[in-house]
Length: 280
Image (cartoon, rainbow, N blue to C red; front, side, top):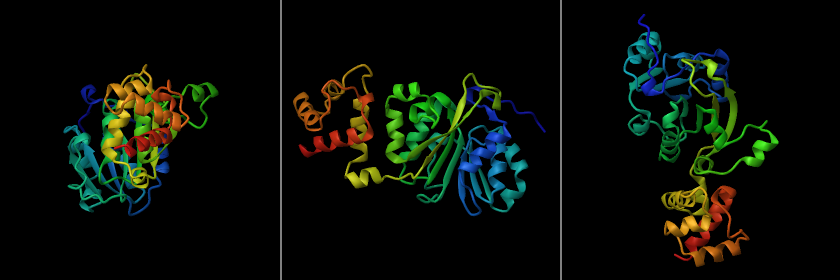
């Protein structure tokens, strides 16, 4: 069989640890009849583990060199209709064309680091959402979203909210599953990874609070537009609201007028936004 080496241009690092592969499958709670969308199957190590649970699979692979390898390796599963292999870009997925139904599929992916933010944004905000996400990401990125349960006191004290973290928490419940050393990949990347799980995915935040999804994200992006600037200054500069209105709202909500976006929680942003919306 032809030896296929990882492409640096595609950010490929093939996961080779059986322990990590088993843990990913375990936390995905897969059972017979489940439908899984796997992004970046590589040489099929995780694909094989998923199929062993009885679940059905759609895999998306951007590297055309790997398609024949996967088709040969999983010929029987393809013939039985349990596996569909598609060549394509994970950032250009059309979930409707894949015949996926809302909350009726799970997503498992070992993502190239450079597409993490865009992929999370696309899949969480899509009209057709997965019921569960289990992703292999850069460890530092996962820790920006959610700290591990055994995080040190210093890590907890230093954790600051950010646009990525809030963007995930708006749609679901993130969990730091496990750290994964760079030694578990071939070739080994320059940084360590971690497994992120996002469960209970929905758009209930917007429905329950009667908040426009697009408008709220415009507000959030403005809030974090200047990292070292005060929240009010960012919102005024981005013409989200006037300084006078914002100061009045902050006083009503007992918020420090000099506070920065990173020091607020999702609930605070929701309250500020709802007060702003009252005057429009």
